[in-house]
Length: 169
Length: 172
Picture 1 (cartoon, rainbow over the protein chains, first blue to last red):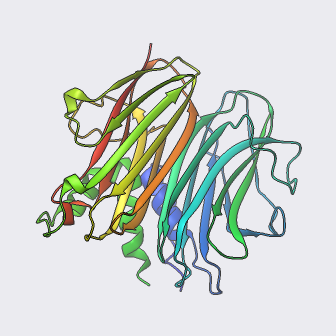
Picture 2 (cartoon, each protein chain N blue to C red):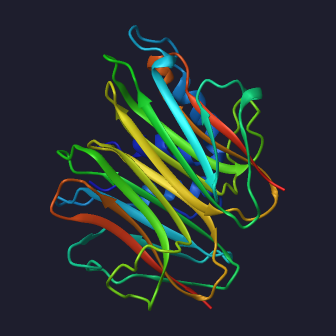
């Protein structure tokens, strides 16, 4: 079942987040995480990414690219929902990070060193569990960055993630 | 599945503009159940930068909330944990809300504003002995006075009150 579609966009973060939730369709097949990740630059440009899975390394979907300038404040946010009715997992996790990468679209995840931003959560995952976060990050150094949120330790044969490339020039 | 209902509940937590309304909605049934008390549920908060660290725990009076001094552009690591120490009481659909924003930790119930630096919300159940934890790292953007806070929303249904741990972060 799909959630109802919103009729218009909104400016405040609260409304935007509400729209994120409203816009996110629930998958009809047996995926266990529904994800929506967004990145917004100071001029209001927003890129969105949805649930992908690994393996394969880097997933299947091409990543959107958000362009920004050094010193810009970028607002990242994600919402993840466990939509698989049978997925109980103790000490499951969600990790969110921004890390420099070689080039946009590279498949492998860079070593998680010198992260521009990072957050992680450990919890007992139950059906319907929902987690969201938002963060404002100033990227000072020009370069290409990977913004990624991913599930961890869900006791299944794959994990889910969503990712956006950030080009700071 | 009632998407609209789920969306509304979660949005109230993360949206600064609707936060107060969310608190009212969540805290309406304030009658605690037997077998559970606010003392059974503990929140711990730790802030680190360089080799310095400071901790805060739930049930500290607002005037006793600790202060951590950081430097501008310094990377702050914030960790939190929540434990339901009750041996028989299960807490369902508790939202664990964490934020870092400009503000005063010594006010009764600081709330995030529209330009909150970090905010997260996680809806989960806490079985007896159940735990949850998290952390984030971020570079402190500028001088100022900040509040970092971890709090429950929805625990009052069983505990009779919400639980929170707060700390002041000062960047001279």
